[in-house]
Every structure is written in structure tokens, then in C-alpha cells.
Amino acid sequence: MTMQNHTIRPPEFKARKRKRIGRGDGSGNGSFSGKGMKGQNSRSGGGVRPGFEGGQLPLIKRMPSLRGFTNIFKTKYHIANLDTIGLAYPNGGEISPHSLVEIGVIKDERLPLKILGRGDITVNVKISAHKFTKSAKKKIETAGGTVQVIE
Image (cartoon, rainbow, N blue to C red; front, side, top):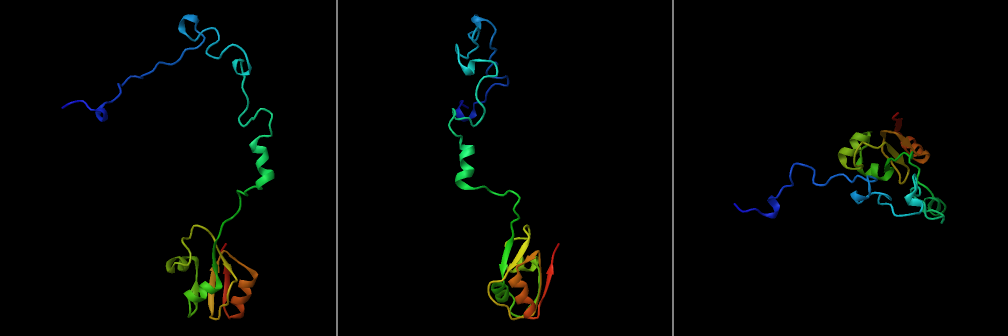
């Protein structure tokens, strides 16, 4: 069998030796240790901090004034409107996040469920969810249904 490019493996030992700087001029990395002659980056502890732009107002400081910010603690919800629930349950009954997942109104149960008040509901339903808008709660109770908040 002939040797081919895809069958070649590197040897078991490390291919390249570590660069030993500051060990004399004969090593090739003596005297200035590969850092050039003068300047900020040649000094001990030299260089600039991450994000420094030479005195120009850095991007990290410019962005909040231009674009606002993202609240990382914001709670995300799955939402369901009353008109969607009314179509999915024309005869009423008990509604929970699990039952809404089964019929495909919401995707999964990982996020908490919030019921919104768009549309009308005319059937008697018992809905359990994590949050309700005021209008949704009012419409459900006027139709004879009950609301249960999941903690």
C-alpha cells in the first residue's frame, strides 16, 4: 500500500520546541527578546488594555449611548391569546400549559405561560397559567370561567 496524504500522521513527540527568549544573542531571541528596541510594547508590563483605541472614545463606551442596552434578567414568556384558546377549545374545559403544548398552541413548557386578552372567549374554561393580563382575566371570568395562577 502506498503512502497518501490522508494517511500521514504526525510523530508522537511535540513537533516544535518552546521559544526560549532572553537566553543570549546566539539563541536568536537574546538582548531585546524579540520585542524590538523601544516603545510601549517592549517594556515590562507594556501594552494597552483590551478595548483601548488610542484615546478615541472606545466602542464599548460608544454603544450604550447609541443602542440602549439589553436587560439580561428579563423573564421571557410563551404567550397565548384568548381568540386562539377559543378556537382550540370550542367546548371549554380545563386548560394548562401541558394541554396547550399537546395541541400545538405553544411550542414547549420550558418558559412560563402568559395569557393575553386579544379576542373574546364565550365558553366556560378553567385556565391555569403563570401570568394573565387584566383584560384576559376579566374576559375569562365574565364568560363564567376561572383563572388559576401557577407559582
